[in-house]
Image (cartoon, rainbow over all chains, first blue to last red; front, side):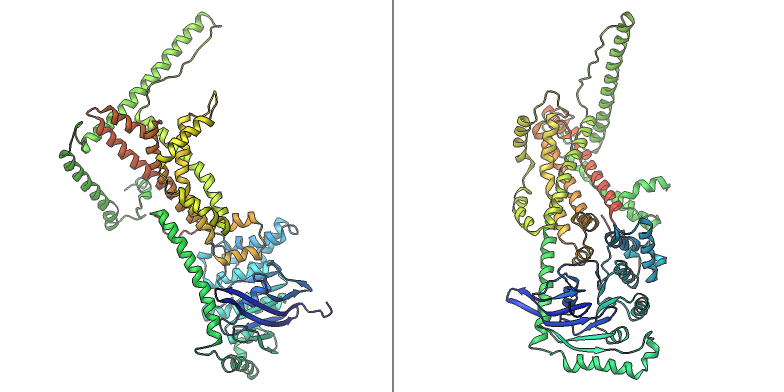
Length: 299
Length: 327
């Protein structure tokens, strides 16, 4: 590559097939991210934030355009692009330790000895402050703790890019604040490249180096990019009265609620949401059908 | 109540702590259900007159139960005596001539009720294991692949409702033709019953496994993809644990079906087992026959119930979700 861009999305389009023809979720998404940068994606629900993340993760394939990571094309999922899922996605039958172990064994099976792996797993659980509960199963720990383990699992893969899909969306405000602080600490230590999806304007401003604001779907794309030049380490209390911080907040808010105000009825955005719901409904129907099948068996 | 008694009652769904209210709920209510049943049975039985006499009530059935136990003990004694006589004779022979050839003949007495229970249990478990060995892996493969699922679903749906009695003649003929050996490891009748049972109890496990496997959460599948787990690791670490509850639902249904099917198959094919016992008693037509058949009915029910409880205990042992209520 001529330019030394770490991660680059170029002209990314994606179409999802629907019964009424292909649905264009993203159109011409371009984004360049430097190594060690913390980037947030923000936008209204249904605007395709998750789709962008899934394309970078390799879980979706762009219809047009593509993703380059260190000059290599991304076309399948892999541990160098670790994902922290919204609802933790821990395997419920494994303890916190075993969940991280599964990832570590997979990534380092040829490069680390057993003892080194153990140390590495414990080190990562320590980073997210989960030492005390590392041998508990997901159903024995709180939502915030589960998400911590999810982050530890992603960190333990030593990813080039860490992808976080609304990692704190399902948590209460206090727990969320704790985890944001933890994440900032870890980020200060490791200086990972992170792409995080969020709905939360404060979270975006507090954590990010840049905030990528997306337009409403369908055919969503990057609307504006806001560089957040607040000094690190950042402290939420100190920032609360900081005029610069509030200026950034206002900028994001004005993008979301003035420039990209969600139309109440009619055209663009509801279509996007509908399609998503349709696909969810379809899977729900499938599941229901299967359950009926199983019930018949039971009868 | 002693702790041992508590442990024994545990599988019946009794709570750990027994206070008066829970004791009433756990013991008195089911007991009164049984008593009401016995009463209705008793009254009903007196009013049913068959060509073999009055329909047996609880008392007669109890007596016949003891009778059957007695017969079993007598038969065992006879067997022991038989071998004792042989041993004595052989010992004498050897005393006279140490070079003498010694023959030991097997005892060929008739199978008692208890023996038949044993035969049936072994057959049902063998058939069930054979079916599970096929159904679980097949279910996993079919469940993981939508195309395979669509391809095999019609076949499965076609064979699922087939009665064992329809399979039986075919299985018998095929076993007679294919399973030919001078010194067979298993009796032909055993193989026939086993295959019939397997054919009938395959389907619930197969379908439930397939459904369980195909409904794994998309998130867990994504985790597997991000980690680039190999197919085998994916199946072992993610697919099987998440499908375990459904697999066990299938297994319990299968075992129940296996037990019902076996009795019918033994009855029709005259293969050794409880089904044959029932049929023999029916053909025998003595005044005790109905009582003895009734004993068999109760024993069949009890064994079916216990098999299900054992599966439930296994399920609780392997299930990762300890909060889930299993019943």
